[in-house]
Amino acid sequence: MDELARFLRAAKQAGASDSFLVELLKQQGWPARTVYESLGAWYAETTGVPMPSPRSTLEAAREAFYHLLAFGTLGGWICAIGSIWFTMIDYWVPDALDRSYKAWALRQVSWQIAAILVAFPVFVLATRNILGDLAENPDKTASPVRRWLTNIALLITALVFIGDLVAVLAVFLEGELTRRFLAKSMVVLGLAGAVFAYYTRGMGKEGQPAKAWHTRFAVLAATLIVATLVAGFSYTGSPERQRILAEDRARTQDLQAVAYRLHEDWKSGAADQRKLPATLGALDYNAATRLVRWRDPVTNKPYGYEPDPTGSTYKLCANYGLPNSSGKRPAGWYCYSFDAAKMPGYVPLD
Image (cartoon, rainbow, N blue to C red; front, side, top):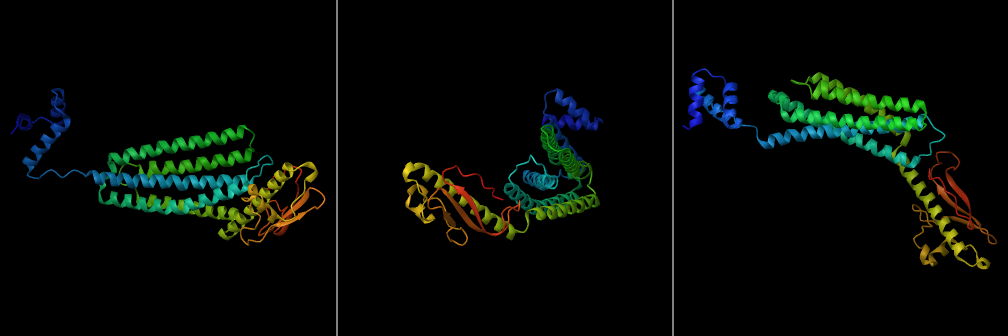
């Protein structure tokens, strides 16, 4: 028996408390871990019950993995919900000064819907695993891993939502409509409150989390998600409609590219020899224009081309699947007018 073990045995028999012995020996230069190991050995010998094996590093890593997965997916679907509602607010409360690109907004909403459909089920599964583990091992409710990750999650959440509020306020100070500002502020505060409630009253609460509370949270979250998805799909339409819109945008981009190329060809020719090509197929004979697509990407039929044989004006036409958002371009065959002598104007993609 070594010197430390003999001293601890004698001290415990004399009635010294564990805390007193640990502090005393720490002042004498003994590491606290060594003292606790010796005390554990003494209790094991005295009681006849061996010390329980410590939690493995793998178990702690598994616990951290599920907590991080739950927080990451929670942040994913919460932020996606906020993004969709921001877009819907911009759509429902139009601003004449807002010239945001609607095709980009449609794509963004589609991505956010996909993020919700993936992240929320993963969040539910990760949370169920955590709650099941806590039910089997109640001592883990005071786990340092859980406490640290919970506080880190709250800190990150606070910083993210503070940043969102700053951005919303900055846009308001730049002149955004008051109704937009108030609606977006309510969205940010509501989602931030939901996350803080989840961690302070649920996952981060000391002791065993109430299963009923988590069930209510999941039901309310699912209700909000359904409402968000309905709003999102009302804005984007079905995947089939999105495909048709993407095809129409490609057609408009092609016509714009052809118009730019015809303008460049017109400028490059001598003033007395400038003439529009008889067909769009003639563009293939110019090495600089071979990358210009002059056929419909879906039907592979040439775009419509109606040149003025004696001047610089012409029309470019395509067969569109849907009308654009402004209603100025109908579905079906539609032509844009251009002048090769002038830089072609911008053609809205939506």
